[in-house]
View (cartoon, rainbow, N blue to C red):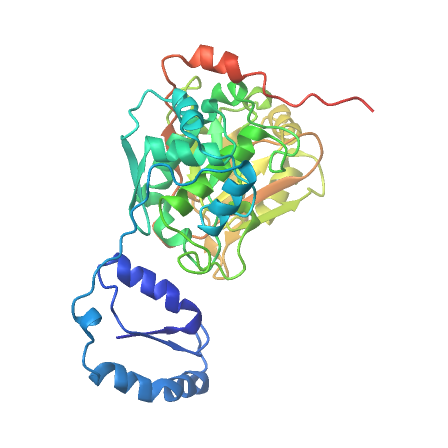
Length: 403
């Protein structure tokens, strides 16, 4: 028998079922989550005391004595109909994310699979909480639904692999009340090949690569991992960044080595780096000298795992005044404290990414530490026919009319 806050009863049933205990008795209480008020705790227990006793002494029912996992078989062709009917069906089944999806027809999935040389049944990862097998084909299905192009698939595959690394603590952050979202930082030539935005409005909607790659990851987590809002994903307030949080580093305008080189990769390698932030902040420096910019970065109080977004104009100022990336990092380490306990910032706690467009704003995407979590980088593997594939889809860019 288990006691849980009444808002977490369905979550508890899902977790118990996933551990092979679908018949466990779970009682909901009115006690506020993590309550420190003794009177609230006592009154909440008093209110369910009789039910607790009953749950402990009542004989097991036949279902409870011999619980069975309910596995619903899914046909390979789930539905036939118009695009509108498909969207309504997928939404009612809980397979969509609130926005229209692209129907994952057999032809569309086969086209998406051109983005990899891996076989369809290759398992890239097992995704919590249901430990679903993220095969290449299942990943491709969700990539189609998200509106991705075949040239996006190599990034999506690498992102699934990276997110599933225990060092990200995806097992905590994806289902936590804190509403964390996966951030993908892409480095290497592939940024230009598939037109990942690295400049103005890098976190804004409007770029198919940034949007579809991030959305695909969210659908993969939902449909393969089994993370449903309000059941497994218990985010108290939620997080709009879960729709898509993908950026490229503006390597061409950076005076320093890019992020993936800092992590031991070659400049010509393609990589994706993952972390889970749940807060986003912007600020401007009081002075646009190197020290003024560094002071503003430190003043953003990076947490125990943060991505600090430095715009190219500020990076150039640093370089012109002789500041290396290490000097900027050392300044931040010396002048920034993180968390309410004023913990001394550590070197591995944050990354500096040169991204964004002209202006004066700098940004911070912050996470939380203390979970044994860290940044995780994976190499993006391209298929043998990459040049032809990139040529085929490389013209997918918006062309704006001049006003």
